[in-house]
Length: 323
Image (cartoon, rainbow, N blue to C red; front, side, top):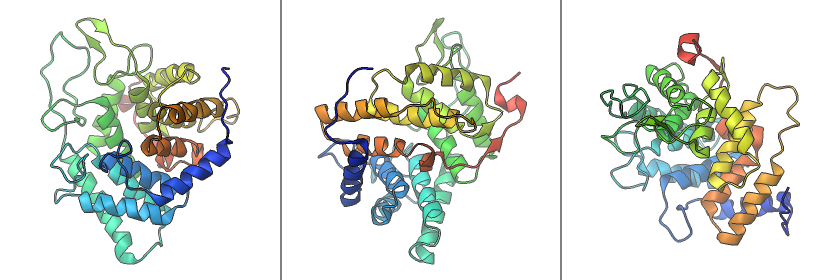
C-alpha cells in the first residue's frame, strides 16, 4: 500500500470534524458558497450519526424552511427546482426522528414527520419522462424513476436516492419504489457496475462509475434476495476499493461494501482505514471542504451510519431481476 501519513490519528480527525460540524452545519458545496440542500442534508444525517443534536436540529430546520407547498426541496434551497434533493431531505428528517424520538417537543417531532411524508408525497407524484424505445440505447426507457431536472428522462442517481428515501420513510412497497428497483436493476452493466443513466449507446457498452454503482447497492441495502446484477456491481466495487477515489465516491462505496457484508459472519476482511485516510489526506492537500468531510465522517460510522438504517425488505423473484 502507498504510504499515507497523517499528522493526526483517524480518531483525532473524527473528533476535529465533529467540532467543525457542530459549529457550522449549514453549508454549501464548498467554502464560501451558498448553503445547498444536499450538503445541509448530509450535515444533518452526519450530526445525527454522532449525536450532535443541536447541529442536526439546525440543519433539519433549514431544510424545513426550504420545503415548498408541494413538499419538495430545491437543490439551492429557495429556488424553484431542481428538486432531486427532496429525497435527501426526507432521509435527514426521518433520521432525526429515529435518533431522538422523544426529542424537543411533540410539535417538533410531528413537524419532522409531516415534512418527510410531504416529501414522499411529492416524490410519488413526480418522475422522469419515458422515451420511445429505439436502437440508440440499451436500457428500458419505459421504466419511470426520477430525473435530475423536471421534464427529462429518469437517471440512475436521483432514482437510487429516491428509492432509499422511500425505504427509510416506510414506503418500500409503494409501486413507485418497486418500479425504481426494476429501473436500477435494468441499468446495471453486464459485468457489474453502472453508468450514470444508460447501459449501451449506439451498440457500445458504457463504462461503470463508482458513485452511481455504489448508490445502487446502498438503495438495495437489506433487500432479499439480492438481485444478481447488484451482486456483480458489488464485485466491481470490491475490486476498486483500494484505488484512489474522490471523497464523495468513497463515502458511498464504503456504505455499499458495508451493506454487501451486512449478514456475513466474518466481516474482518473489509479494511477501510487506508482508503479513508487516503481520501482525508487528499482533501487536506487540496482544500478544506466541509461537505466532503461530512460524507467521510458519515462513512467512518460503517454499520452505524444512519444511511443504512432501513428495515429488511423481501422482493418477489420477478421483481429481483432473477429469472
